[in-house]
Image (cartoon, rainbow, N blue to C red):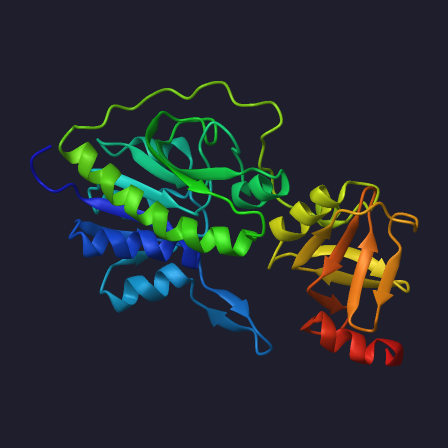
Length: 307
């Protein structure tokens, strides 16, 4: 394709803003942005614009906010921008009529090395499962979610204490760079799309529910540590202390056979708090007690007996 393709960008959260900014910085021809409708938020329930909408308006880009993606009026409005290519980053599942009509199709930026970790929460599940690396994939949308032909991939290493939030921020920037490379490769036809391999049986990334956040102290300390960091900073791993729900966000492993039963909450020298696991102790760096804010464990312990 010789001329710059007309691009419609679709995304909602801050994660997607980095990709949209990268396209504009690369002087791509973004002709419109599609994002979620404004939603009430905060104590006053004022209408809140998505991060993508705020960025788009600040850069004088037209914004579409469909309530229903299958609505004929949305397709009519979208078609009026005559997109050659659509780009999806952290958006809703699109009807086939929407993703299939641009001449160059619709590409997606996904937070894993597909075919592994297809689904809504690839960043969380990669860490929960103790992966040493993950990555970013750009791929062409097709009917079954996250199964389209792969365009480009880039690996990201995961350190032993990296949280989902930290990986999210790294992936946001890496994904933006890979996206620009992908679009340039499609323009100069240097990229050949490749069908996905068969995914690993145990590497799925479904939406995170409350049940997934509950800590099983009969697991190894390694598994519990991975669960905590895979759910940090949101939604947080949960357990109970003195009958109260608490959330954990940052922990360390102590590989020493515990004397106590699994799940026991132990305080040492009034400055260390830890839980007994199957094969060791999980030492807490911070905690969020029910009804209170997240705090360093030292602050928590100072007031613990008074709670």
